[in-house]
Length: 186
Image 1: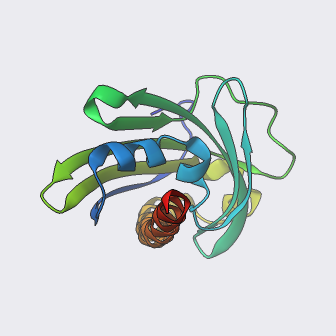
Image 2: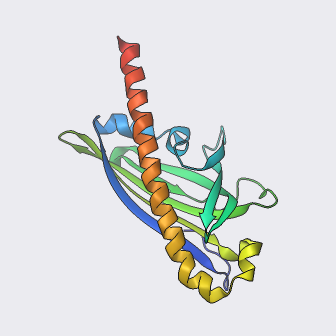
């Protein structure tokens, strides 16, 4: 994961999930390899920008941390290993553009692996979401000890809830996509 300057206060959530899809692994991987398809189901996404040449994306989102709604930006760079059905997501070394005023900049790392099963495919994933609490002016009024003790718990819970909602959205979108493909073949 991208590093922060020494002395900053990092709050991080780290979540692992696995879920099944009733489709061949290659079909699931092809579906997930489209960065727009992969990121649109993210909860609380207000806008998604995708670089036409780079394939990198900028997600504009709202994050709730320590009881505060925070508008943020997360830049995402995908990496693909089609022979292993693996997708890696990370915050690029260089931001995709200047940070819009008043928005928090988050760090993101993701790993997705599609594995064939007897009933279709299993998708195993891990995401790490982090931000520097010092970026949020209101949090500067909160004693550091409270942020250090409560912040990680709150962001972890947020990340877990976000992942669960994301999976539900992704499964619904995938089933819709599958149905549309089947209708197109008929």
